[in-house]
Amino acid sequence: MFFHNYLYRLKCIVRDKQTMFWTFLFPILLATLFYMAFSNLSSSENFSEIKIGIVNNDEYKKNIDFIKAIEQVSSSNSSRESNLFDITFISEEEGDKLLEDGKIEGYIYFDNGIKLVVKKSGINQSIIKGFLDDFKQTSSTVVTIVSNNPAAIQNGLLNNISSRTDYLKEVAPSKAAPNTVVNYFYSLIAMACLYGSFCGLKEVNAIQANLSPQGSRVNVAPTHKLKIFMASMFAATTVQLVEIFALLGYLTLILKVNFGSQLGYIALTCVIGTITGVTFGTCIASIVKKGEGIKIGILIGLSMIMSFLSGMMNHDMKYIVNKNVPILGYLNPANLIADCFYSLYYYNTHAQFFKDIAMLSVFAAVFSIITYLVLRRQKYASL
Image (cartoon, rainbow, N blue to C red; front, side):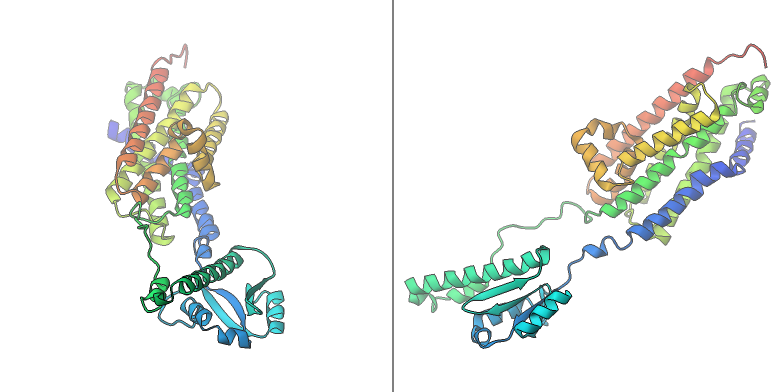
């Protein structure tokens, strides 16, 4: 009987076109729009050579030290894979025209010292100025040392000046580089898991005699209502889990979103997240004593608020919540689901992952207990 009811509810859920659209097609559509909007977001942040001009006058040609320094960081240095500057040799008049047309970020000329001309302030202009300031400070240091100790040249001063020692060691905090774009997709999956609440709501309505004719038949049937409800819950969870795995496959295989290689933990997150979403729907459906439309409106509103706070619309919101109201992050199932995926992608340990999984399991248990306590007390005077 259990298996019969399970198959029956599977067919009913799959044939519900409205529910299938919101729980399956809508997340895929939204993922596609996210991909189109964010696909070039990371590449736009990549550094490219700064285009500058140098006035090739006599004073520049005499400054051998500056020529060597600029060659070390410019595109003329073929030994480096990436360089700081892309240099064009120009006259002063050509520099003003190129600067006005936006073809260079600034130009350097020598007139009783190094001069820099820019049209506006910005990151590239600050980098150019920083390079020139560093060159001036180094040159001034060498002149001061040589004037006080002429033998310093023979003792290898120039070699020591040209070689910079970095006393800070760069250590990767994790196995992957931080990526704010993946947060949007992780939050999207969290929203899709919570949309399983629509399936949970349908199953509760299907066994309540005051809400559907089907519920009246269930209540007069000789089969225990709890058994029928458990079969319905398994069916709803099965359908939603298949949809989540399909969405996950679309994101990884088609859109190439990085979820890491820990497939077992990823699957566990999907299972726990789906159960949390379905039980969330059953809980709302059981405690809200209104029509189905009101319940759906409440589910949509709560799901979108939780998705927003988890960073689906603005990735900064997640960090704002964690910084100012950290308890809200732990009370938000969408945030916990997204955190599970991100911890698998970013962290070297599973401490945060298992903490999030434990919290989601607690939510699923609480939602299930509330649903059971409410439904078991429902009695009908007449059917």
